[in-house]
Image (cartoon, rainbow, N blue to C red):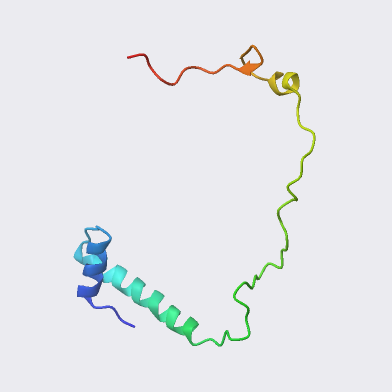
Length: 97
């Protein structure tokens, strides 16, 4: 599918892009090649492929969300550059007005 210069210009306008004449020609060729590739993909028979198919074969890559022991307060603060009353101390990010 070959896009016309006017179609490329319209797409650029919708994307709020200002293209030169050379860019319109170059991107027109590139967009046309992409659309041709999509046409090739549309021709493939995918009726036997489930919609949730995965090519990696990974299943359940997330660990089980379960309660387990964590750091105590002293361990969590051990490497902190500054702490006060059991909390991390950080520089203020808001200025007084």
